[in-house]
Length: 148
Image (cartoon, rainbow, N blue to C red; front, side, top):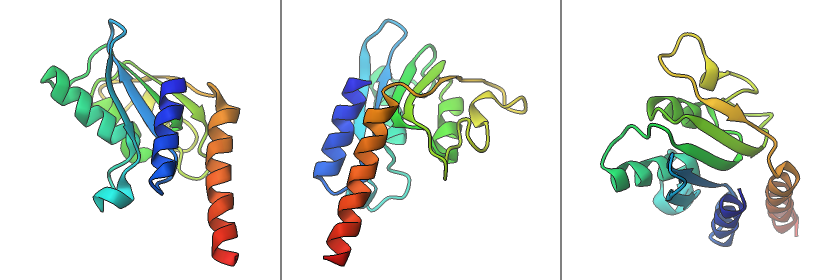
């Protein structure tokens, strides 16, 4: 999770919402480490989790990331949670819950839905304070800059 936090800090340096994601293989190898790039890429789907899944899939030459674990600093949104299911990720570990858009467990329960063909094990709250503080500080600075 510390590596995901490092990626979130990279996103913040680039003016992006500070979210980072890591994909780790079943063998424990890091397959991808990505940060949000929605602004830079001019792409609403360029969330850290999506970019990390894409990079990992290319690296192993397979869109199914069977046995992999994704670490992300914020609970995945509905889009990212759906991508985790489609990629056959075995587990997602996230830091802060997302009370507004959380799709993994908070609002939609996509990761463990009985109607989908795959379930993703979810572990939330890992280094939650650190992850939440990154986001709060980012948005606090944006509000201060806009009123300043």
